[in-house]
Length: 193
Image (cartoon, rainbow, N blue to C red; front, top):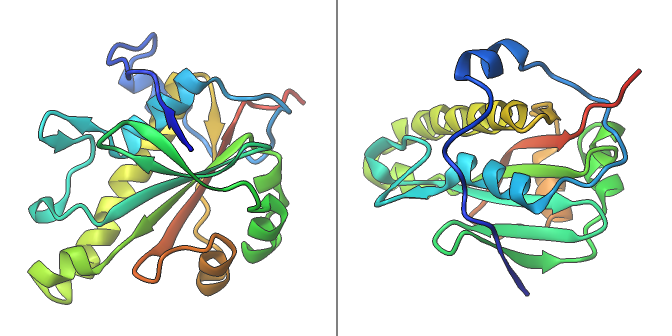
């Protein structure tokens, strides 16, 4: 199953400076679905196309990152940047199992969605050797920051998660052998306390 995403917009109601100022790690989310237009914007900001380039710089244009999203009560999807669409991978991926593989960070299940950034290191190391690993880490930082700032621009909140059991997350998500998870980013509407 493929879900075509709405075309991204490039004008926001918030300035970049406001988004930088407002960005913080939030681990408490409302029980509220994120609109498909907002999901589209988040995925485009993470790894979207703009002509022959992408929204995130990549060493030698090797583009090692693959973006996945776990949407609450909907399934686990791969972001196809060429079609700007979501490809259903499975309806059976459990946020509870993902949270357990992330050292019990159960707020993952509170978020309406979690973006999982994965990398195929070989795309970059084939060109740059072992130094390519460093370039992948730099690129994932660019990607994650775009996601966090886009979330703020859309009146959403997020939190970066790097603490998880790599092999277990890979197994729970049934990722391809060549892909390694680098970041989990739960996103949602901020819960009022």
